[in-house]
Each structure stands twice: as structure tokens, then as C-alpha cells.
Length: 317
Image (cartoon, rainbow, N blue to C red; front, side):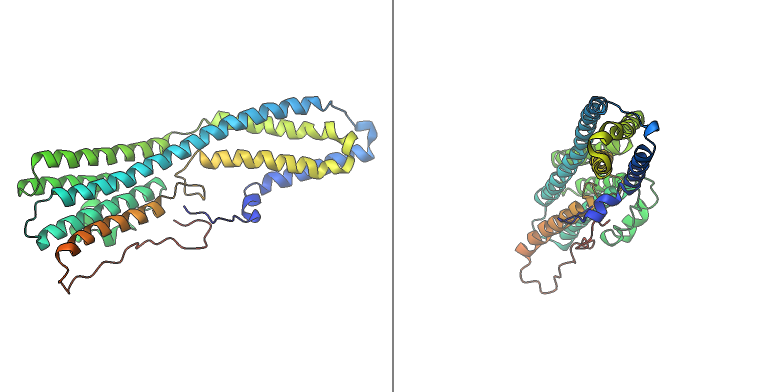
């Protein structure tokens, strides 16, 4: 998903609006009772909520680091997908024997490039729980599309089609055994990257850890007005609300980062990355073909980036 460079404050505060309203109502109610019913007032040393706040800070820092590590790992995996996708097409272009630069060879390489772009799109959509077939129909032949739609795991089916094409090229003596092994190693790395993404997606961050942090945070905000009311009076209402907003925002940030494939604004920008991969791969194939078919007036470049991200959106699929 793609975020704007300037995120509206309305969008940020909207993530914690329920928590902010509850904290604000609690502090207002507390100050009203403390101000008009002095007999019910209870003073707690400010050191008590301070100690709890310190503990919460350490817990949130640890959780934020762990969440960012998961998000960064997801981005590293997709960086590897970019590199391996380019390597795959470079190997197909370089290894495929085509002394006459035939149309058949050009179609083979173009199909391979489009299929690899389709793999990237389908992987990103499946990780987000969306229909993996929706963005790839225009990139596949009718036969390929009918093959993959029968499979529950569409990206895996596309890798299988890659393998079938390699075997076909080997049987036609267009690719020798050693070259087939090299390309297959690249496919194995792509499969490993797919497995890493699925591991991140399916590994749930410990629920009890988040629950304990939320409980401690609520305890801190409950005790904080008792330690501030004698010093600040009514001013403790905006102060406690602001402190609560800071803690809740950090907690919410960690929750969003810990799941980088959940179709949120903080997700790994998989569709944008897939757009760039599609553009790069088709450009590699067509530049190679243009080099030897400069006089062919019938050549038309296909439309790239068929899933061009929408500008000025907070996030797009």
C-alpha cells in the first residue's frame, strides 16, 4: 500500500478516537468528582504512575522493535523478489537459443516475463486476502489462466507453469540441462521468498503480550489523574488526554507494523513493487527484441503498469 507523504492528523487520530474519547470522559468525570466532592478525594504519590509509565515505555519500545523487525523482514523479502525476478528473465533471455531471433523465441520470453509479473501480483493479492486472479488475467494466455484458476494456491501454480516451460525448452534443445538447473535455482529462491512471506503472514504475534500491555496502560491512565490533580487541577484533563494519545498511538503503530500483509496503510507496498517488476521485465524483453527487429513496423509495445497506483490516495490496493 502507498501512503501519502503528508498524512492528515484526522487520519492519525482516527485510529485512536475511541480510546481518546474514553480517556477524556474519565478525566473530566474524575476532576468533577474531585473538585465538588473533596471528601471522596484520594491522593496517590506521583511516583506510582511514574513507575508504571516507565514499565509501559519499556514494553512498548520492545513491542515496537519486534513489530518493525517483522515489517522490515517483509520488505527485505520483496526486495529479493525484485532481484530474482530480474535475474529470471535475464537468464531466460541469455540462455534461450535463438540464432534466427524467431517470433517463437520472442513469444516464449515475453510469456515468461508476463507470467513472472502475474506471479508477483497474485502473491501480493493472496497475502492480503484478496482475489489473486483479478489482476493477472490480462498477463496470461487463456490456457495459462484456465490452468491456474483451478488451483487454490495461484502463485504456486504459476511457478509450476514456469517449470513446465523450462522443461519444454529443454526438450526442444533451446535450453540445455545446466541452464535449466540455473533457472530452476532462481525459481527455488522465488519459492523460498513466497514461503517467507507466508510464514510472516501466518505467524500470529502473541495475543497475551498485547493484552498485558493494554491492561498496564489502562492502569497507568487510571492512576495518573490521582497524582496530578493537586498540582494542575483542571489542566490535568488535556495533559492526561495528550499523554494517553501518545501511548495509544505507539501501541497502534506497533499493532499495524507487526502484520505487514493485512491490507492496511502501513503494509509492504506489494502492488507498487509488482508494478515496477512488470515494467522492468517487459522492458527487458522488448529491448532485446527491438535490438534485432528495428525494421519491423508491426511491433507494438504492450501497455505497461496495467495496475498503475492511484495518486493522492492514502493507500490503494
